[in-house]
Image 1 (spheres, helix red, strand yellow):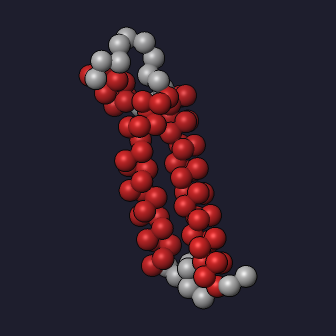
Image 2: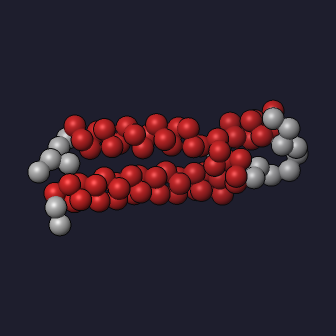
Length: 84
């Protein structure tokens, strides 16, 4: 396998792993009910008195998750994980 393919595979695996970890944190917070701000947003934007939908939680979490994912990839790069 060429070095370029190896680096792309490593980068892809890192991006997937970081995003799966963030999704796991979201699911734990959602299922555990430990996200008070999410309930506030749900009521504010007309979600009603019922439980918060997971799709709403996911949409709320995508922005910060993207920033955190990018942060981790840049941090991995600074520490030389993608060097030959």
